Image (cartoon, rainbow, N blue to C red; front, top):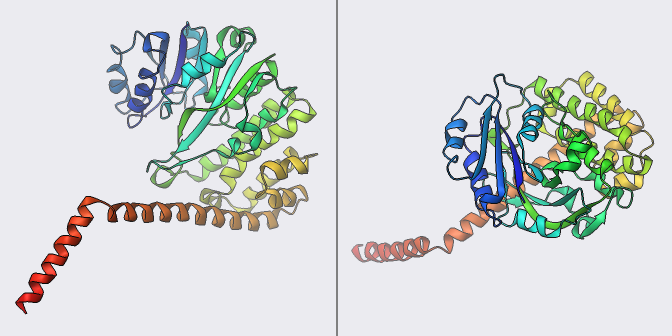
Length: 374
C-alpha cells in the first residue's frame, strides 16, 4: 500500500533534511513510501542535500524544473503525474511528520473514504509550539468517521488543510483535482474545496500527524510593499475561485477560512507598508466577501476580529484602519509576552542547572577567601 509524498522544493537547504528524516522514520517503513521532490530551480544547496537521500529510500524521485514557477501549484501537479501510490500526500519541505502519522491515518481510513485528515501543531524556530486556531474549537477535538461536508459543514473553516490529508489517488484523479498554478499563496484553497465538496465520505481524527514550521516571524519576515498586496489579493482571488462550490451553509464556514488568511496579514506589521487608499481598497473587497455573513458563526470562530468585520460590513473603512492598528499592537504584545515568558523559563531552568549550582558554590567560596584576606 504505497503512499506518494509530494514535495515542492525551493531554497530549503536549512529544513529539507528534517523533513526527509521525518518521512524516512515513518513507522510503516520507508519501503511503503514513494518520495517525489519537484525542485523549482533552487539556487542554494537543496539539490545536493536531497540527493544524499537517494540511496536511503527504496522509492525516490527527484525532478528539477527547467524554469522557475515561483509558486508550489505546478510542482505539486507535476508530482501527482509522477506518483504511483494508492494514496497521495502533499507536504511542505520545511515541515515534519509525526513518526506514527501514516500508520495512524492508514489504520483509521475506511474503504469508502476518499481521504482522511489529522491535526497539526505549529512550532517556531526556538522550539516553542502552539495549536493553530483552526483546531481549538471543540468540534475539532472529536473523531469523525465516514462523514462529509453536508453532514459536517464546519470542516470548510479548516485552514492549511491540504497537508493534513491522506488522499486516495483514484478519487483525486477521477475528479480532475489540480492546484491553481502561478499563485504564490492561497493556491491550495481550491484543492481543499474540491476535496471537501467532491468527497462522498471522509474521516477525521484529532491526532497530531503534522508539525508546521512557522517561518513567518523575526528575521524570516522581509515582505515588500508589493508582496503584501499580492499576498492579500491572492487570498481574495482564492475566495472567488472557490465559493461557487459551496452551498449557502457551507459558505459561511468557508468565509472563516478566507478571513483568517486575510486578517493574519492585515493584523501584521507589514500591512502598515500600504497607503490608506490601498487599505480602503482591500476593505472594500472584503466587504463584498462578507455580504450576508452569519454573525453567530463569525463570533464563534473570530471573536477578536468581530468588531473590525462589523466596521468593514458597515463601510466604516477608516475606522477599520484605526482598529486594525490596535489589533496589530495587541498581537505584538502577545508575542512579546510569549518571548518574555520563554526567556524567564530559560533563566529559571539555568538556575536549576548543575552549572549554576557550581557557580554559586564557587562564588561563595571566592567571597569567603576574599573576606579572609581583608
